[in-house]
Each structure stands twice: as structure tokens, then as C-alpha cells.
Amino acid sequence: MQLTREEESILVGEQGPGRQKAMELVTALGKIYGAEGLIDITSAHLSGASYKTIGDGGLKYLEDMVAGGAKVSVPSTLNPVGMDRKRWKEMHISEHFAEKQLRIIDLYGAMGIRTTCSCTPYVGPNRPSFGDHVAWAESSALSFVNSYIGARTNREGGPGALAAAILGKTANYGLHLDVNRKATVVIDADIDGSVFSYSLLGQAVGMAIGHGIPYFKNIHPEVEEAKALAAAMAAAGSVALYHVEGVTPEASSQDLSGLETIHIGKKELEDAYAHLNRTDDVQLISIGCPHLTEKEMHQIASFLKGKEKINKDVEIWFCTSAEIRDRCPEDVREMERFGPVLADTCMVVAPIEGSFQRTGTNSAKAANYLPTLCSQKAMCRDIAALMEVVM
Ligand code: F3S
Image 1 (cartoon, rainbow, N blue to C red):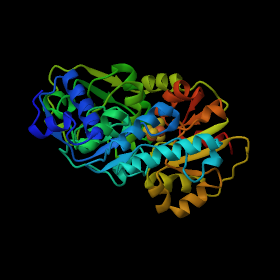
Image 2 (cartoon, rainbow, N blue to C red):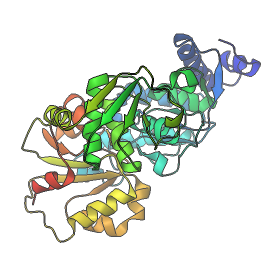
Image 3 (cartoon, rainbow, N blue to C red):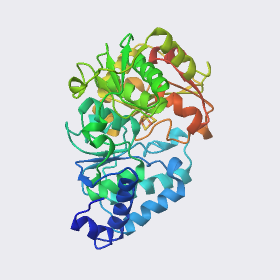
């Protein structure tokens, strides 16, 4: 791999151990994936922020990076952490967990990372532009910016994205290159257009193709639908980029000749639904995976208006970013008659397994991860059907 003189100097430690560690990681990834060199990035989004997922080993890694003088050199945001940093007691979080989690947030902050802790930074402080090269972790967010915006990122892991943020560079391979952004399969979709149907569509496509780059026909997603689709395909498969005819910016330049077409309609959606629903009885309902947008907050609040929560045994959490929560005080008031609107966290990265065994969600992504990462039996239904459980 070709490195500039400055990159070489970082690699031999002339700019401190923090940057050296970052360069070692980025160049190692570049060698594995056959990159010819590094490329400048305009932003980073980091995962690996919950104490539940990174543990003491990850905390020590972050402490070493900070002690080594590591600072990010591009605007960088952070994924959800294991708790709402102010309302963690409402989530049954222990003092020990809270202390470690707050330390992790402080360490990311010490490196210059904006600690807003959301998986939808693209509707907030970190929205790349078309053609930007970025280094994003968080599978749903990176797929959204690759696809809906036309920025370019690989499916980074937490340490790789942090290293790239510190350097302001990443290895130039994979989805940074035109040749790897071409559609590999056509999806002829027949869905009702609700956000939940996009989540099931993503599940069905992820199950059908695993990875690859789908080109969708007959759908018209806006931001909320596109994020549901991205999240579901990234969890049910490992899709990091998709094109939608007439919608996404790189769709018109795709050559579809010779590609297989897969039809996804009623039967495939029913199969996806059956795959995700493993219980009819829940203790927790959590909505907001990926984090709720302002529009979704308004929709949920207006749906709940005039309704009452009868079943007090089931807890309800709504998950969004602190910024969105602050922007919607009236919606928050309406929603909190049913349960807390939590910021900075979500049902998957919070240690819910200590308090619950059965959780409902309207997100295919969450329903994929709740059994594996949180030892839950999952229910996956649209918001109206979930709310029937408590009304
Ligand atoms: Fe976000 Fe948590 Fe879902 S990080 S995409 S709400 S699993």
C-alpha cells in the first residue's frame, strides 16, 4: 500500500502513540482488503459505545487511546450507549453499569467526539453530502448514508471507525470505489408502503440475498422508510448499500442487464413476519430502532392522543436522540403517559436482559438482535398492534 511521507511518519510514531495505533489499524485493514492507499474522509460515526458491548476491555482501549493523545480530526458522532445518561434508573440500570458507561462517554468526548449518542446522526448533526468519503460504523446508519445520500463508506467496525476519525483518513477499498457500488440483484417489491412494511421488506430481502447490492423497483421510501429498510437488511443480511429506482442518487446510473430479479410480496413478508415473531406476550415494548425522527415522534404522539395505557405490567420505552427529544416537548408529554422517551440509548445496547425476557418492537433489526444480544423472545408488530397489548 502506498503511503505519503506524512502517513509514514504517523506509522512510525512521530505524531504520538494514539495516532500511531490508529494508523496501524487503518493500514492493516487496507492490506487485508487490497487498498492501494488511504483516502481523506469528511466525517466518522462510531459504534462500540455501550459498556454492555465493549466491557472493561473496550474501556481500557479507550483509556489507552486518550492517554496516547488521540483526538479526532474530522467531525465525529457516537452511536447509542447502554442507558439514558440522566434517566438510567428508569431503565433498571445498576450504579456500577452507570459509572462505567459515563466514563466511556467521557473518554469519547475527550477525543473530541460529539457524544450525542444516536444511530440516526444523519437527521441531526452529522449529515454527509453526496460523494463524500466517510468512515461510519453502525450498520443501519452507514447503509442509509451510502444509499439514500450517496456518501461512501464501508461497513466499519467500532475500532476501525475510531482510527479513521483520528487520522481523518481511511483505506480506499470496497464501497469507496465506483466498481463496487453496482447493483447485483433487482428486487421487484410489492408492499403497502407503511414504515413497518419497509422493515419486513428489508428482513425478507436480507434473508433472500444475505449480502450484495439490491436495486429496488416499485417503492418510494422517504427518510423514515429508508432507515427502516436499511436497518432490516443490515441485520437480516449484511447489506450496506441499496439503490431505489427514481429515489436514490446512484440508481439512474445502474446497468441492470443480466441481473436476477427477485419478487418480494405478500408471501415473503408473511414469512419474514413469522420469522421475527416468537412470542405473543411481552414485558417491555420498545419503539425507536433506528432512533425515532421528529416526524415519527409527531405520528406516535398523535396516535396516542386520547388513548390510555390500561396494562400497567408492560413497560414502554421510546428511543430517540437527545436533540430530537428536546425539539418535541409536546409529543414527549403525550408519549410519556405511556412510557419514558429515552435519549442516547436503545433496547439492544441497554442491558435489558437483567430485567426482561420478552420484548416487543416494531423494528425487524431489533427483532433480529433481541434474541441473540439480549436473550429475549421477540415480538415484531407495527406500532398500532404493539399498543393493543397495553390498551
Ligand atoms: Fe439504533 Fe439500537 Fe437499532 S443502535 S439501529 S436503535 S439496535
